[in-house]
Length: 499
Image (cartoon, rainbow, N blue to C red; front, side):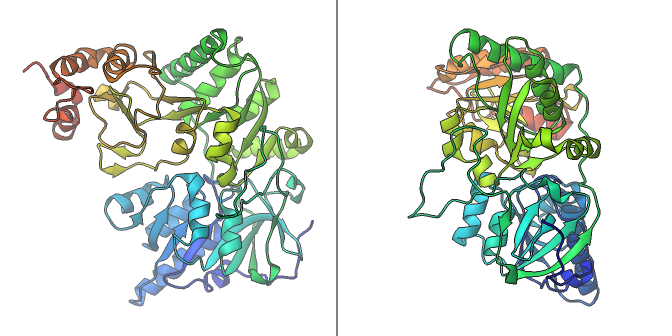
């Protein structure tokens, strides 16, 4: 498949001229991988020009997950976001959301595509997608992510393509595009192992819907994660130790099970620790994001296959992948997020989920999204898709934050994304809390004893000792005293439950 001239070749500004105030746009991208860059910036420029003329201009922004600054950042700074879903990680957009200047509604990532098809998000006017190539017949080879691009292209009135020459057409074969039919005619998804191919390696669209092509040569705006430090390294080792013990106890098959891991520094440390633990055999991943650490593990033979929806790697690593496509096409598959995160498949494959928490309470509830209960950080992402359906669900976090001024283990989470019913294991650098088969009182004791920082352990034990009787002993008058101490004095250590 090669670049084609059947479709109008546009400048980014000409593409942006197709977009109108109030339009709902589905953008490709899952993390900065595969996110469009030139067209959203041109839409932001159009918004600024319209605002200078005293005219309103905002658009609904729907993506696979987070994107790069050229998309979320540009549109946020131009005050061009009518609403945003399902997930974001841009500081400018986050500021606008927390100030109430941009509407945002959080969604489980597996549910975004079907919600769009069902009409729950309104009519989609335009799909803007990045491609490595497109044929005269409307066969699109996507780049470093799939996300929800297939759904956006299917339901939108018009399609704009950024044809990015950073990505060779030869990457065709890296993707597996499959979209389930909707109720009442939906059938089971015929995927029974991480490696199963169930769809097509191209995204097929009606070519008459392609309104134009904008040529691009910009790399993904993907930054490198930090190397593991002492805390994240210890968290990773604790996760690996827990899973190795589960294999030894016969609760995990000796051949192991697929891993799902979140994105970021802790996830990198966890994956590295799994690869270096001799009790854990070479494993597969069925996850969302494939990052640098995964590629290292593939080269060492510790990771045999990775299925995801996004190849979120640094430019140097991506260059290496493109130089060795034969090797990596046998070990990587990118699917729509509706499939990579699908609860049916998570339950069927027996996936072990490992996600990061902002805070956990002593009962086992998890806050993944809000700081101090009110300010959005990024969103729930796919953590709920996996957690609720995992073979074993694990949450990780450092025991303290802000130099020790915040305990991530608290009496009651200030915002709950995952309840105690879905959370089986909590792991910090301090230790492991296995909550399976434990009642609330047992959970509280084991979380405080094993996962909290020594600075806060006595405080939390005192809270628990003072808690009123009940199945879940809780004192509502002081449940948020640690949060209040931070809000008022910038330090949770100011709390004293003995007084």
